[in-house]
Amino acid sequence: MAGGTFNIEGGGKHYEGNITLFVIFTCVVAASGGLLFGYDIGISGGVTSMEPFLSKFFPSVEKKMKNSGDGNMHQIIHASSETAIHAGVPALMLIIGSFFLPDTPNSILARGHPNEAKKVLQKVRGTENVEEEFQDLIQASEAAKKVEHPWANITQPKYRPQLVICCLIPLFQQLTGINAIMFYAPVLFKTLGMGNDASLISAIITGSVNVIATIVSIVTVDRRGRRALFLEGGVQMIVCQIAVAILIGLKFGVSGVGSLTKGEADFLLFLVCIYVAGFAWSWGPLGWLVPSEICPLEIRSAGQAINVSVNMLFTFVIGQAFLTMLCSMKFGLFFFFAGFVIIMTIFVAFFIPETKNVPIEEINTVWKAHWFWGKYIPDDSINDGTDNKGRVGL
Image 1: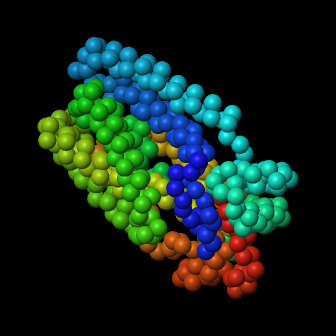
Image 2: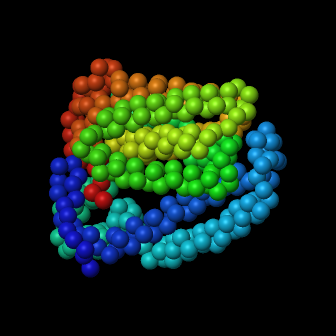
Image 3: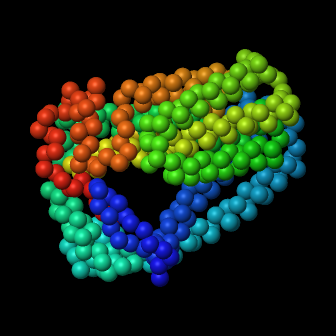
């Protein structure tokens, strides 16, 4: 059953399709994985704000929280137990959904079952008229089979822009400090003098801002372009981080001893929320989108592997180092992250061209016209006959 119609665009082509129950069900199952990830971050953030954890691993932070009562701690532990039970719901949905979701048409084609692939495509689109898109999928599948040595390919000079950007964008994404702040939001706010409930509620507020701002990015990214969101979000994060550093520095100094009034705590939460919003409509989604847009078929697998690996590596590094850095650097930690945001904003301004509405087969034209990357792109790589081979219709 269809819930409406729309045109699916890709490389200048329009494919007929409907919003089907199959698509909605797939989105729900996929969202269950996101809920599990959100639970993991949320419950971990709650655990790191508990006194037993802090007394074991971060006693210097725990000393600043001696005024917290045992009753409140038992309430947090009880709430965490209930949250763990609730987390079983999306996990169960994910398990059940996996039994009903078929493979993608691309995957089925790659295994040599074109008839089955066409039936799945018709089911996904909610229409029998999928012949044009299906033929494009076949061409893309055949082109993919011809790709050899993607890791060797990406080291060639003509792919230097993709190699550098697939390394630096995920690195910069983590050096914004977003994961550290979101992961440790409860303990951060408690360290600044907020109570157990206030710190957890503040973390929920920043998480909600993250979701809403990401939706803003989805709506505006193809209107305003990638560079505009990168640059605006970067400036927004720089201003907020510097303001947070100044506020904490004035109230707590280098000794880390001090307190916040209710108004000052609310203003701090406001600054963190504006910072989170700036990240969520810029470096958050675009850190994944831009690397996926710039890698043609012959290096796509290598480029995406580099992007994800660098991102996960520095997620781990920042997560491990944040609390130690917070205890030693105090308010200077926010100047530290602000400095990197300045560097990455300058990098975007000078080295990342606009990729909005640029088909993958024309991306070399963009690099060739760039003031810096153009020297790496040979003339024969422009419009070299790879028409639509880098695009997959789904």
